[in-house]
Image 1 (cartoon, rainbow, N blue to C red):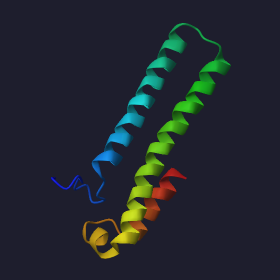
Image 2: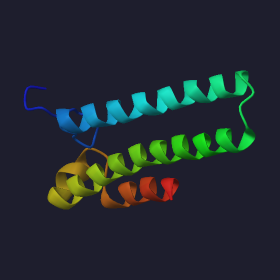
Image 3: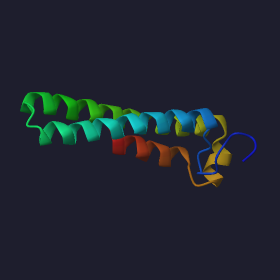
Image 4: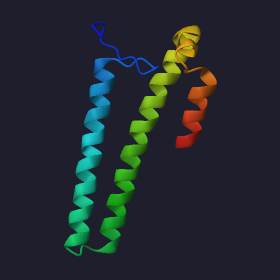
Amino acid sequence: MSDGTTTTGIQLSDAEIADLHRRLRKVEGQLRGLQDMLATGRDCREVVTQIAAANKALEQVGFLLVSAGLTACLQDPEGTAARGYGLSDVQRMFLKLA
């Protein structure tokens, strides 16, 4: 769209989408690093530490997405509900991450 948003139900700005993509690429790199750590026989404690870091980074992506949805719901409750994302829907998404 020309106004810098997408039509995914919850409208995200181009900057928000770019940030989510950047974070996901970071997680992707962490996962490749984990595969290398396993292949080279790195210490289990180091691997677990990296798994925890990758998991936390992925959770942050989810929380940022839900946060954007919550903000949208509060700013335009009727519009987001009409697009299929009422406040209760966003709350359910949050609870899936919690």
